[in-house]
Length: 315
Image (cartoon, rainbow, N blue to C red; front, side, top):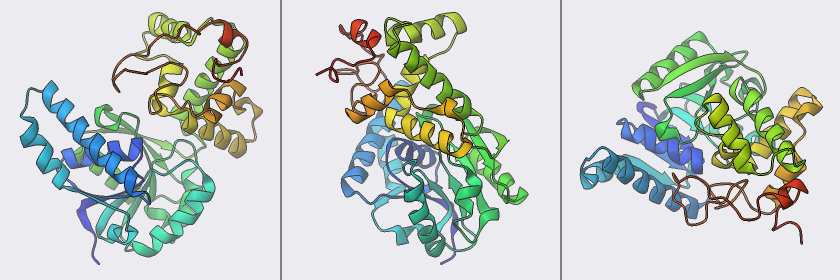
């Protein structure tokens, strides 16, 4: 099958994959969204529908006129063979090496040699992923930030064997999507997450040690003193604490540097299923709040945080 440059294959329909689907479909691309879990595909479709309606209302546009055509451009399927028509493939699966090690040889087999692979990873080196394929010169990092439909900048990562042609093609694709990009060299965590994950982890240690009384205080300091739109712990909740933990583990293992050791409080929150916005609670509580609403202050902020315990983990 000859791939179509106007068709984007998206592997993984989680939070980031859903945002990628929406962004490309809104820009007029046809999208093939693949996930092994049919229920996740349905959640992805529902979330895209809500996201389009919200953006339409903010622009005072007709939601019916917006939603239908955009959703019609997305095909949701559990059949990876549907990716064979894609000119670009954007992978968004979990930050686990064993998962990617199984996935990429299969994608390499399904997709024609001319299809380019964009690895949307938080920390895993692009060169390592490219080594799983027979097309390393066509593999590039394309690090979208959450929430994808609202973020104007993408971190593009050049692997050791990524060709100049692939870098230029990535720039053109993102320009068509209405995004800017900055190209960086390959390294675990690249630029953004090499810095951000350390910041989040250290903020979690400060909360665990009782240096800060609450997550709200940590975030307020960063927003007020430095003008950040979100504090580090709010950012972690938005990313997903499970993704933050996996990213820190990748950074520690890939660099061999103990400074990336995950904070025990972060690890315990993940063990408890408290993953941030997507689960309703993380460092902050979002119960009863919309996806774009500010975090809610918990009455338990303070003593339990100073003891390094979350109220649900203290028994």
